Amino acid sequence: MIATARFVFIHLPRTGGQLVDDFLMRFVTGARKIGQNLPRLLIPPEYSGLPVLGFVRNPWRFYVSWYDFQANLPWSNALFRVLSKNGRLGFEATVRNMLELGTVSEHLDRVIAALPAGYGGSGLNLPKFALAPIRGSGCGFYSHLYGYLYGEPDRLLHVKKVEDLATELPAALEQFGERVTNAMHDYLLDNRTALADAGATLGDAGEAYVERYSDGLRDLVAERDAPIIAQHGYRFGE
Image (cartoon, rainbow, N blue to C red; front, side, top):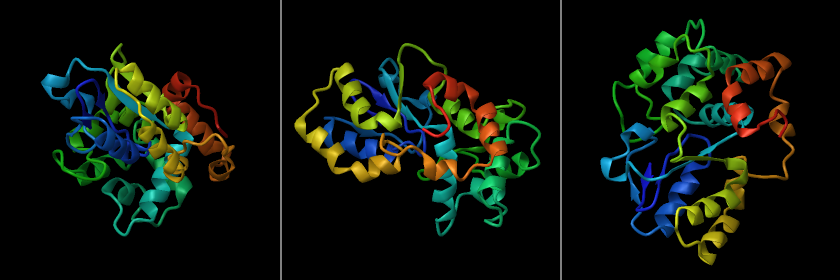
């Protein structure tokens, strides 16, 4: 979470948040880092009436990005270790386990047991009590995380597509009354590789992640994360 005099930025994991954090801390006067991946309900009172900025990612891309990131870490997080059976399961089985946490899941209790009791200062920073409400909800993990971090939609919440981050971030700052400088645009231009890694590219038709999905897993994401897909106009292959 980054708090400024005019808005607050909430970081939804795997949506270019590290890049946005660095951008805001570099260029927005008085920007203040508050915790790691904290939800909107923990915005300090002095910032509670400000607009809230966030980004979202195509859910099909999210699960690929999450799996690959965790699978390549020397020590993956507790969520990945439980759902992948300590790395023995591949992408399809691990993500299917993740998508079933909100239905009848043999893994949910083990995941909750492995999570911390409270907030920390690194990683996903998802305590036990924050994941527990997914039980019986029928929603996908990404939809649950989105709702947990951003809360109920209202006039103060502005969630943009990370695929358009290079244009949406400066536009949002202008909307909030911040002056957008050439240095800001140059920074985003200089970080095109990071933007592409966040899925913020229009040149990639999506073949790389499409090939990772069976028809069944593709359709399961469409079912479990339907609200995000509909709200933000995502389609498989984009």
